[in-house]
Image (cartoon, rainbow, N blue to C red):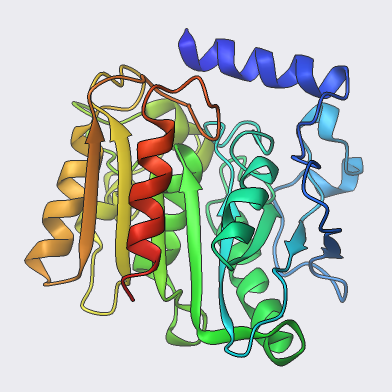
Length: 288
């Protein structure tokens, strides 16, 4: 119910135009449509015409660049959550631009296509975002070896999928996961996300392929994971199992479990540990 309330709140903010895109930053974003030369795949919805009211999102990125420095900066691609059924791109997307700009990190908010049972679709949108950033790295003063992915809830599943499934040329250099969906184990998994991702008749092999604690490899990038201990929407064991899998492979990882906060706090300052979370993430970003 709390996740539903968050989604309803997001919808109301959108309806009344209340800063859902974090436009308090003076930095004007660069908006780029993905796949300008044609889509590589389909979720079966594009022919209906892109319409966010119908949760049919046009794949695009919004790029916020920090002031130019002598050294190239990191960049983070943000994948909003929403159970693979909607994109909460306000408090889990655009509202993060101000924070990352203060860290001298380029912010790339991704509006990805929802899967509607086609799991390759949102992944391919992330990969294309990585390619575009690399193609503009010199122009945007971005470190080619400092491109990361960040995701919230089901967006965390997408980010961790990219971090465990990507080919070498589009493998991110780091991952930031906030209260992520990770496991398809029905004992702990958020099965609604997996139904939206894979459809209602997913096979055991499909579920295991996208149970990302089972897919960690030696080249999976370092991770920052944050969540609340009292999360009743996405079981905290999703995060701890993923952390265990990373450490089994000797991959650097930081795990922060805050006592309270439930699910879906994003950039909301009413989250009691908001400042601590920002401090923890800032320290981690400076560590490499």
